[in-house]
Image 1 (spheres, rainbow over the protein chains, first blue to last red):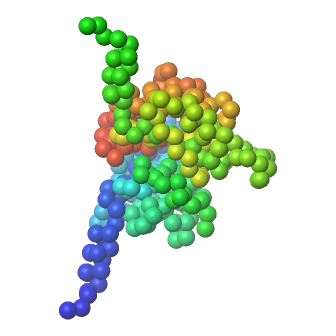
Image 2: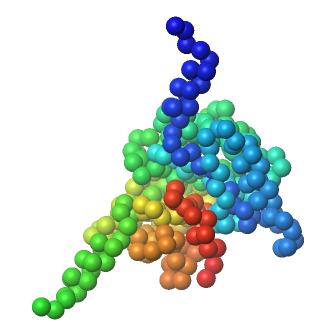
Image 3: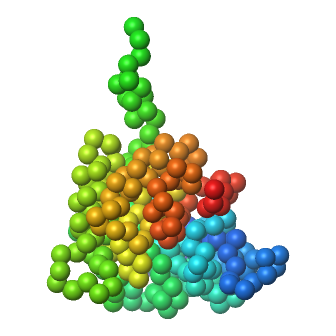
Length: 145
Length: 145
């Protein structure tokens, strides 16, 4: 009995870390945006939720990730991984990059979002990262290729 | 038999959230610091560890919190609370404020670091915050007094 492509995909899904979550700030607006206009953060959150369909990634709307000076903002983490915060996101362009990044993180054995292969906006838009609770100080390679 | 001050303190300790942790970036240096000089991030980490003695707060040294442009950097969280990232910290001045903030967070019923009573440097130095996994969107009051 051979291994089918479907089997492989199922194995990969099972290997992904639990509770892969993208948090999108829905109060974020860009400098100069009118106070009463629809918030571009909400547009980004809705786009991310659409891009996440069928991936196992949860998208969670948050009021304020406190990265207001470098908005739009989003964060991501899975069980046992580092937490990443991103800024300077574009509501129309970056929803898919967030989900792609979350999937990369979910499959990272060391809990660190790989630099190589990471969507460009998740390189230049990196605001900060925080280790998981069970962090061992030997596992903190710096944020470069 | 009366209640002694020691009893009260013990009760308060028991009410604090588990795994209260401050992460300090030990690779951080300020713009203009020589590459080979002792890292001020390490000075901050050692000061924080000393300030944490007897408080139940753990201080964890991390190589790179990826907040390099606004260093020195530290983060804090407890089980079930929001995670906070701070920048612009001073190695000689801000170790105690970090531990004070972590203790405030550990006693916050809603898992949110209170704005009122928070050390000033943890207001003006706030870089970002990320909710806990069990986050309910109704619990995300904005970052103001």
